[in-house]
Length: 224
Image (cartoon, rainbow, N blue to C red):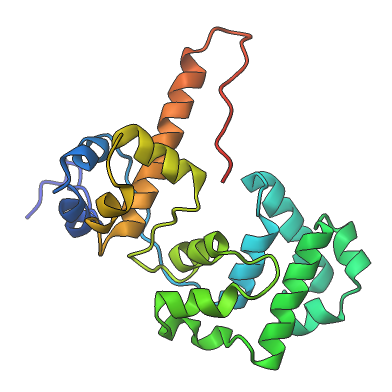
């Protein structure tokens, strides 16, 4: 019987097998040694709503994106294709969406309603097929589709070379190396590797802000 006076043992890291795989790369192993625990990703039960939320949050801070999405939810009652299509574009614009995002979310809604994108079955499709289905829509580039695969569908083996932070981290950690070859060696755990690199970039920026003299301008943040 466990001693009740002792703290319970830590829960096993659900990423442990994947982290062990990635640690075969000695450079990445050094980053992993200081990386914070990352939550386990799970597939969304609402792929359509998740992608709409991703579009709303493009090029915005987390706080601003959450505020605008909350206004959209409050106005529509529920973010569905039918309600987005019935909304006046000017009303969506007044909620804080740019005109480009209004066009994108209503294009997503039209594709869902007409069956051009079967959101209910995207989870059953291979990664590249999902990307091919989404990127013809206005405002949905490969980067957005890859973020949806990672964080919406919880796909384990996605890496976005269109992401500036990831490219910067690769250039810093692997100067002069063939980066696609480096990243390919992380398969089938490239999503977790990307998340570790994002976390490392954030840690370094936070350390730089803490070390900066009081009143000095903080280092610029990398766009997401």
